Length: 121
Length: 110
Image 1 (cartoon, rainbow over the protein chains, first blue to last red):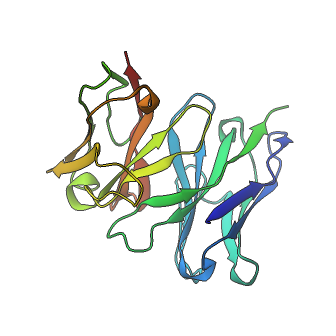
Image 2: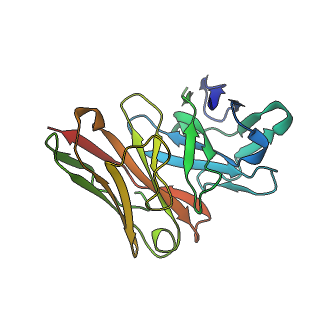
């Protein structure tokens, strides 16, 4: 069974940093591209970042470019999101999402349960 | 303001059919595949449709997807109370080099 388990969410002050982790199991992690998607309280989905299977391609949403860094450790089946210079508008549930392998486009076929990041003083 | 436009809400009676629209532009829907997600209250999103009209295994054929030009549509037939959820469309935007989602549509089964 595919499992994605996020961790690392917390209450942090504006300007602070946080590192999110996503532990993957039940599939061959090294063959899949991965993403982070967030959802502010009561709001819709917002894509945050993408990383290819080999880390050779990385993309960010404009709203986090220069502040967030996505990475992965294929040996440990783990995905990460380093979040710096956090702002109140970064408050959201952050989901780790697997990109469907055989899709011609971009689709996320497995999601974690999410981890809550709250940025507030 | 989302790049993709969806109606905020739709409603229909049990057993009926409903459609949810998703409008974009040539840089996103017009030249890329569309996916659809269902988010039940308090849970993570779930993939319903990928590549415009393909259903992952386990998704009933009551759910269907289509695309025409710069718009896409999700159809749900035989509505059940368990279908009450938020539905999102998503695709790649070639101009933004980013994944974009619609603002979401809340489905109420009356």
